[in-house]
Length: 219
Image (cartoon, rainbow, N blue to C red; front, side, top):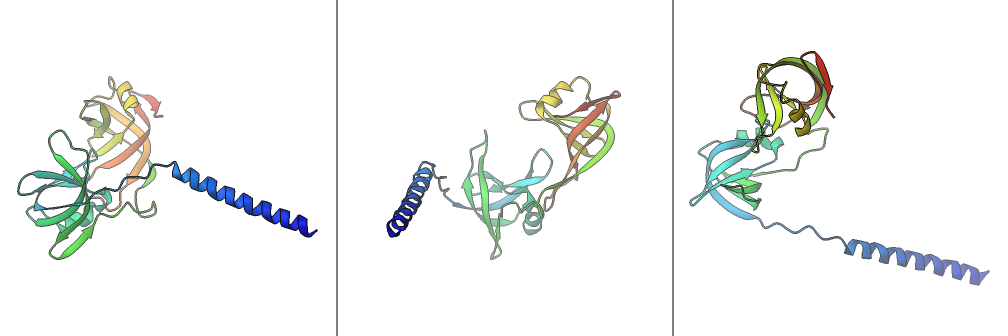
């Protein structure tokens, strides 16, 4: 009986050891994410930068030798717009991002102004961050929004609603969803907490769209 217990215990310990070795060996095959070097820049806030939804997600910083585009988390827009203004002298800590064609771009880590530090925090959980609700509506297309490669990415309606569609869907509707066309839609309105925009647009992720009495489901 004693030998059976000893054999069972030994087998259990060997199993644990093998599992631990396997886990260590498995982890060893993952390439670690490289650390990012943080640099310090000082200069004057020149102006704000916004994304395709017209939401502030960056600002331009004029240093002694160059102008930087400083990107930050979009949910920080209200806080940062309250804390810094164009013309303010600030010091930032940031990490390098891939350069744009004309401008050096960095991602904000923190701002120092007037002896206070403001940190670019990650996006909160869904409870406090981006959320959505189902809505429906209608309006007239006042502008077809395109990206830098001239691909249609959405439609801006006369009531300041932006309908967001996948590129493939927007491309298929290019001959009917033109400026002046009247459309109705269903979709999910993005509820943006903490974001700041100079002009408020209702952003809708389109679920369906009706043009000329013909309805299309957006996949």
